[in-house]
Length: 289
Image 1 (cartoon, one colour):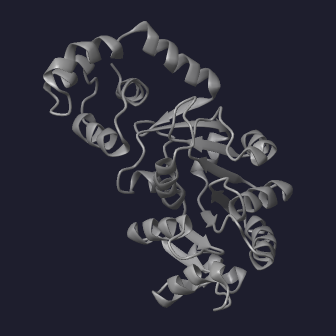
Image 2: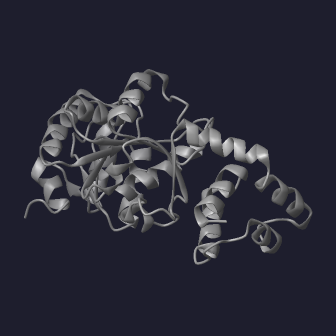
Image 3: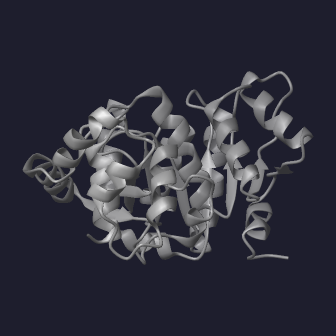
């Protein structure tokens, strides 16, 4: 079978984590038509007593039905497809399969900026997003975030309101809304921008999903901007992932007395670029010198 069909069946038909999915892709990527049966019967990832049942399921009508449901629920993009973005392909453990709704062409845009931050943002963070996003849109930059409460949601909303282009990477199935308060915004993003998920239809918003989706947010963008972040926050994980992929990271400095600025101030102390004007971001994506 074709490589993309192989990857989709492994994705939807097994419970393998993202690392095993990536390992499987690396093992079969050079095969024009990899065989599921041959892979199952030779892979060290499968216990001997499970091989026959897994082969049967990966070729079953039930799995075909699930794949069809996901296709009807949106679209499916694999790492074997030409439309898969090069920047994302370069990261450690790139997602082998992505589910999407909306404008897949946005993945081919030349410049993307990730904007993430505190869920319980302060007025300072709110004003920063409202001032920053319009300038990015004027320069045709695509915003990328995670559709969480706070900075993420405001980034997407400001982009939609400004008729810009935005990509939301979520930690659950496309048919699931999380948080519930973002239901209207999630619909707006999939209507005018792009909604992306590594998880099949029906997947719940589990804690580890959000850590995993952060690498996609960082991997899509040339630069990642941290607006507000507490110590040990998810936004700092995204920043760390971006730095690990040699991507540019900017952080908004804040008061030393504000808990939401502790994370960003520490990032700056560790070498991140202070984000004090729009030009800082433009320089990091190659639009200014």
